[in-house]
Image (cartoon, rainbow, N blue to C red; front, side):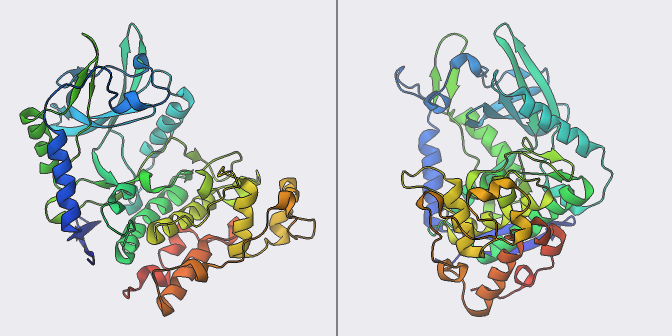
Length: 426
């Protein structure tokens, strides 16, 4: 069933309306939520939520109880999700009459990562700019610590968000975003990057579908969440008198599938300034200058974005970068880059001695360790577009995937790209 999407403008911000997502899948989604919203306790030996993490230690996670007041300000309404180093809770802030998402970090969460994220938000708060891209960056309401005899748990209070692009595309049977939806999303994310790069001098370094979330345009989604938790509490496992493990409750889908705007989240790995060095980015999204330990800057985000775009439209990774054992391999990664882009120019090879591990001094492939260049092309593996539209799309991708960082288009330049602004769709 074809998905139909259209965009609208509200209050000067681009909002996206996802109309008629596959109805059967939406029904399954709601059915699952109804089933798991029945209140009963699990068996003691049954692992629940964060307990399933391979390195889970109870004392590392703060024992939240629904209904408690955090920092004398935020009343806990229900659990939104959990991760390796945090749990996230929907809370109601009475003084401001609003809902907030409070992320409670584990005790051993890297203070360096947290201080880096807070430094980024502090830096952003000092920027006086009317750039619309700032509205596509997730804001920070508050930070505080929960101090107990067992230790201190850092907390961040953010505006609540709905699902990520990663989860959104799983609602579709094709497991991919439509071309139109992808374009509308990119217009927002490119504005966000243009703001970060030109106005804030920030490199995000960690752009991936799970770090792009959809804002909540309909506040009744949050009130319905609270009512549902009160009427049919989620599954709960009582550990002892002080600790219970709660099941995360999903936010309901927006009525008429009217979603809010895409928002770029997670600034924990971001860097301030135009030039840096060191390892960044998820493996398959690493820019070539990162792989070869060269200096990198804003254009590393552009490479990252280009590879992610391919994933979202094609539902397959552009780069697999795996060796014979299924492990990530930088050599295989670079070989695939050469397969799609051709050999790098000498100007790139001369930037770092690390390039000599896979290239000769005159730029030829060494085939070290028997790693060969795959015989392929972007045209050969692109499966969803046709004719002129495919040609424009591949030009768009190639303008981001350049060996030399300086030759990649900027976020501002990409906003004017012919494919991005074309109204024809395959």
